[in-house]
Each structure stands twice: as C-alpha cells, then as structure tokens.
Length: 92
Image 1 (cartoon, rainbow, N blue to C red):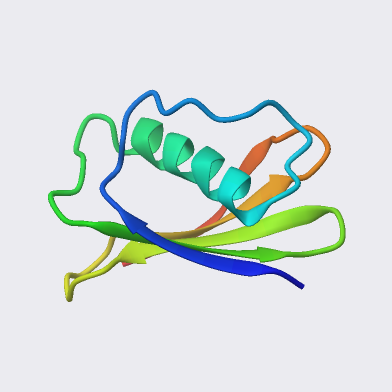
Image 2: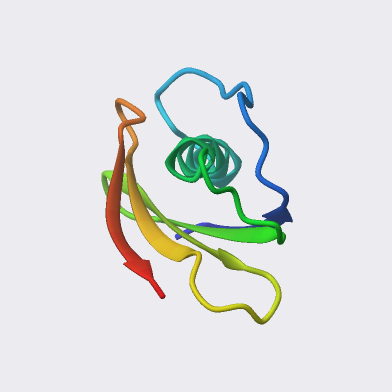
C-alpha cells in the first residue's frame, strides 16, 4: 500500500494526467483540483496538506489545513480506473 503526503496551496486549474490513476501524486493532483472547485467561492487562506493511500480499486485522499485552524478538512475517494472523485466526508 503506497502513501504520499503533500503540503501545498490550492492551485486552480492544475493540469493532471488522464486516468487511470496509478500514483499517489496523480491522486493528490485530482484531489487538489476537486478542493479548488469545492471552495472556489470561499478559498482557504492557509496551506492545505494532502495524504493519499492506495486501496484496491481507489485512492483514499485526506486533506487538511497544515496549521491549527478549525474546519477545512475532508476525505475523498478517487476511482483508479476513471479518476472520478467522490466526496466522502468533511471535518469542522
């Protein structure tokens, strides 16, 4: 099982490779794009960290602020074959 952690500011319109999603870096790229769209109207003013864990048919990506602030965290499921991102839950 592979895992990768990445801390970065959310970038709009980041180019990600096409599916299938074969690496944690690819999953994090898709997660960053999803989070940028989800919070487009009220983007966080802090750095967001991402951690990806490989499962059988999908990548589990957890995102959270890298500083001590309330809210702004969540879990995503990214299907390996299609790159479809599914929001699982948010944390306040």
